[in-house]
Length: 321
Image (cartoon, rainbow, N blue to C red; front, top):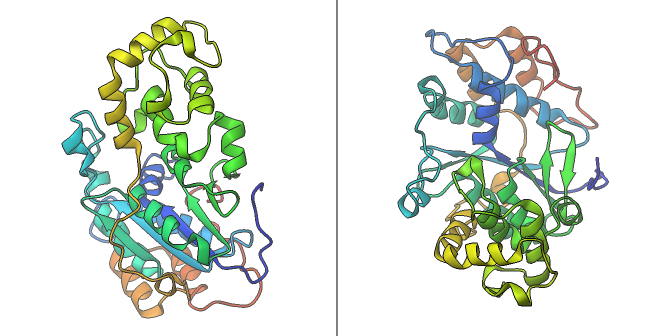
């Protein structure tokens, strides 16, 4: 995988987008699963299997880890823009699992950040900014485009486990044609459907990237197309659209800009993963009615062992997580 560092004796901080993991598990092809009380637990158990797979992955070699959730999904951004993403239309069965999945993550010995004013992505951005200089690499586990603003060379990278890709600063430039600092401006122009950001009429990925490669930020883009470098097809109409929607563009950029000052209490040492806490894990597994296979995989991580751990396989998923 591109962007990998040599694993020997490295300190790696893994920052996991728990909300993404929960939604992915909910909409996966995994069969329906219920807890011991008959409540839907498919998404929760899917995230547990995913994290067990991560913790055992010999390529990832987790040393420090935290996972963040939007709980509730609404944040301060909903007060800024009515169209921003919310829990409207989200399945009640999925919403009901935000609390249980946090309990499950703690049962694996993973630090949990439950966000109720900021978003999970803000917590990840804050931790990346705070710790990147004191670890060998920060690995942000999410494909979300807005986390691209956090990338720093190969020291802070995004990991898309589903596609087997690692995205560093060079990869972002190659794929989108922009530097990390321009990501919020880019999303302001082209929009981000996942977050409910509509973008500016007329702007597509290529035109936005071309302008931001030259000018970097919204406020540096001339409002008169005759001075644009490079000359773009339809520049006059694009410039008119930007001028007419400039206030909205700045609002959308604010929505897409991640907060890097969330008051996280934990030190780096607090994020060290030392293994699954046996008593807590067994109590959780009994309460939820976990399968024998899941219990065995969890107990196999009760303490760290020397050398690579065996891969984990969820027999109910039909494929390796």
